[in-house]
Length: 77
Image (cartoon, rainbow, N blue to C red; front, side, top):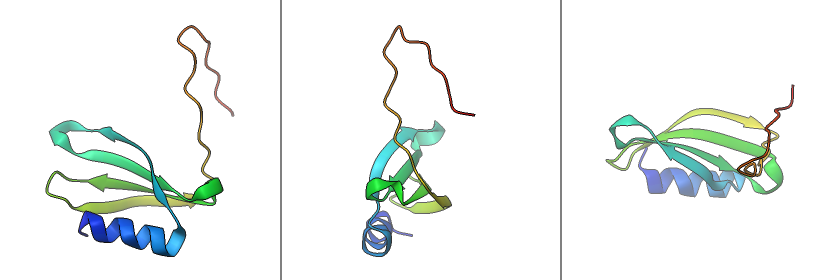
């Protein structure tokens, strides 16, 4: 789907906005959209050509603050 159409659909139907992304090989991007308060989230694959494809969705998204440089990291579970 065209990226701008996908972003509009997520905002309209789920109130989700982009909360993070990272660049993969081939200049492709892995992105995460989430609703306010983390009710829902969607993980997408975006191409340099302007296309976006959802690869997963769920609920209960949590933003985790980045650790301090010298802080030990522990993960839940």
